[in-house]
Image 1 (cartoon, one colour):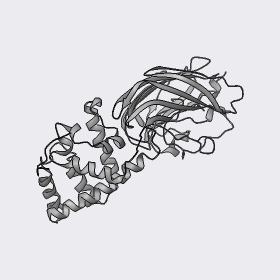
Image 2 (cartoon, rainbow, N blue to C red):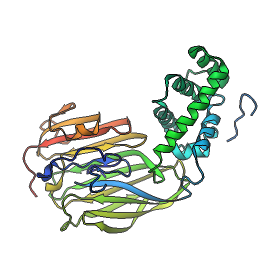
Image 3 (cartoon, rainbow, N blue to C red):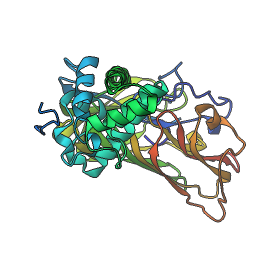
Length: 375
């Protein structure tokens, strides 16, 4: 949850543990944690044919990734690329089941489904050799002004790389396998969903701060009925009795302590969700006092994420505040500002919002304490 950590920050350096206010919490997008020591269809074709560390964890789904392999995804990519590709008016008919499961594509997401799919494919292809990258991007028709047929787009690729259209077609086949492999790799730790939007908020005016988060998840499993979140608190956890609550499309079934510092929250969904559908819910965790609050509210998405918003009511406790707008994980622990400054006197309740986050980079608010927060 928002008392920092939601998705792949196991490589962020540990802050000095001598000062409880320096403990870092990060809000990442699914199943990693800051400290690895502790927590760790039928369109016709043209050819006729890781502190509070709140992290969403396991999901109960039937058939997640069963029977899907790289060749299935590559076949779906080839089907997608025919005719107008990503620019097709009926994109749902172009996206096969394997590709939908590894990208979370679904018509229920509206226009964002197309935008998200384009982003994910380009990210998966970004490290390909230049000729393969060009061939893949043109074959998929990632740009609105791309040619309306695959043959025409391949002819353009051949002209650009000074090869025949058939060679360009083989380049696309090679690229599809590589992109499919990377998409599959991205889902190796998947739990049947990924984070689409996250809005987090904490009010430090309260003696017992409550971290609240509103989630929108994209389902990638064929069916999804339950989700589980793991919540870890700083210190030895001996005397901690945090309060947990959820609302929206989930029901809190059980909370059990699985470690002195860690609680498992099991939640059932209000119905069975299918691949590409959105799940929306809110959650909160109440901390015993302000001494365990870290000087940050941040997130590092592991996969495609459309929006992250963070709001902190600093209650006059911060000396300086700055924005982390897509920085590398080690930067998070710097006590010297590394981004645009916010005057806490002029903005005692700063809010930042980020769109189309880059997987693996860190976003949010960072500050230094004016003085050590009192309980």
